Length: 261
Image (cartoon, rainbow, N blue to C red):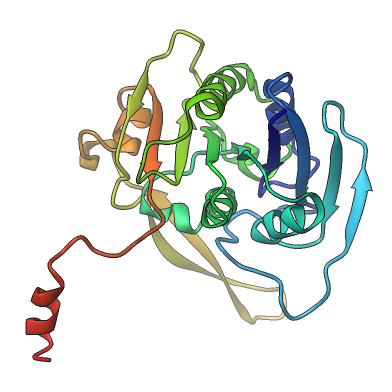
């Protein structure tokens, strides 16, 4: 029987991770290791300057489940140390889309990337949300039915056939208004999703403090064939194949000549 790891960056109490476990029922033994707390935008951060604490919890549909007071990447490492190898790793279902080259900021995508570096076929799956307040909540009001449908469909195919050569993970984004009849499109990463800036505010004592904020790239600037165009304009499910080798595909002699070495 297949062994499936489920993790996320929204935390162990997110309805998204429970929806993922529900979607995967019958495909194998499911093990859940997820952060105790919200860890969005943690990227590939790893906890190495203090010990980790883990608490075993009960979760319907999981053979074993742990809440870890670390980052999503820590969860993958902990799961492999505790349970051994896995046949598939799922990160999500995330509250809010994870698209463009900025997936390296995402704890959801980074957990899948970490699993992929351990040679585990991996899927990061995120559900677009249409209200900002949902992105950092637990998803109480969100309908996960379409995301569950596509997760099960894609996970079943990967378990049966594996990933193509040169593909380490799949990054999946589901529009909030998707249903089972929504088309799937195979895409490449957009250049970027947000235009970040710093917002300065003043506390009651007159001292400045700062928030990193960002505005999403306008739809008219999106490039055809990218994950963002497919989700934001065409309203389709985006599936982007990811290779974790970030080496530029160029003739290395060109770099040698450029640097005059």
